[in-house]
Image 1 (cartoon, rainbow, N blue to C red):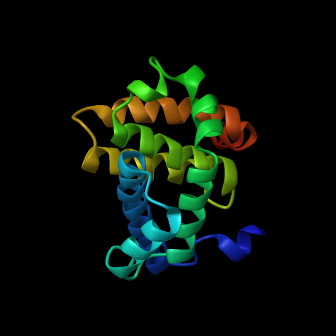
Image 2 (spheres, helix red, strand yellow; image 1 turned 60 degrees about the horizontal axis):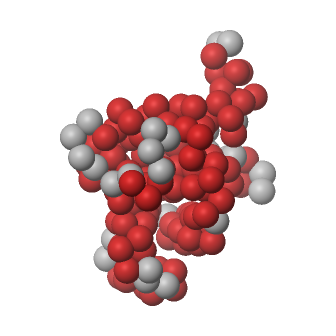
Length: 155
């Protein structure tokens, strides 16, 4: 996947991604609570929440997160101060989604991933949960996107 084919081309596309991430946070929460099948989640969120959103991006990230959630939890474990099972469901879902993007969508700059999911944590998470999520994602980005992070720091 080349960057020029997948990177947001304009503000409309960026807003479509933002809206997709908002729906992703809600779908991840629902999946954790009810283990709803991905196809069912895509159908439910496709009817309302994905209006003018990047539905392909939504489907890609959701499918990857569900398929790899155990691997994501293992990757996040050393960065957490408690087990993933003891995280709030909103925080856990958001961390899994962000980790999915950091691992699988190198077309999206790590700083965008962190910012978007921190903002979603402010919206859906507990008070000050965004600070915890930000710290975990900063450390994860250093592991997963070390070259990108180093290049960004040297600017």
